Length: 162
View 1: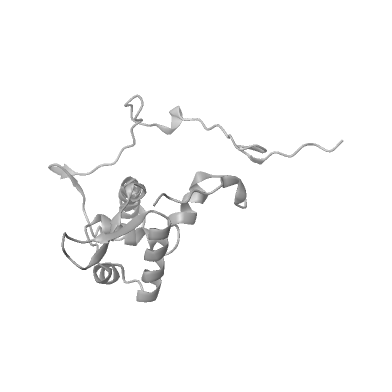
View 2: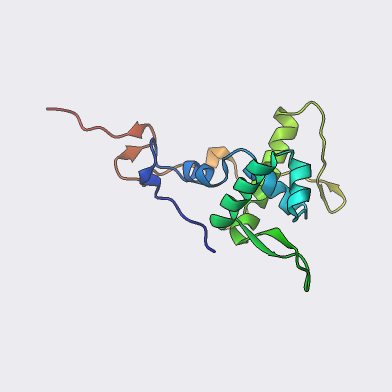
């Protein structure tokens, strides 16, 4: 199932992919559910135990994430009767988002680091690189271009009254 895309012009406020993304994964428990599936926990009971989510809320979030095309249900192993939750292509594309939130949380949200991620033989240090040219991204090298009609970077464009 494909992700149900949103029309950014239909949201209140600035048309924005961030706002549309949060419509999909910004509800409480959604990203920690995705984290658990990333960690290889596919069964409902594993996800419930590791997130601490109330079972009714967890069931509702899982159903929504499946309906939205971020997770899919499938057999855990060939010949098994038990289904589990797995990331779709859209869900897989959330891996760097989860890693970035983890790094941000280690720096700003927790008193002690509860999990460490390693890249080969060293602790992972995230840095964004441009996939087109390979350069490390520096905010000083970026600029934004507002494409939504009636908006610029300061907000909604209003026409002066005569």
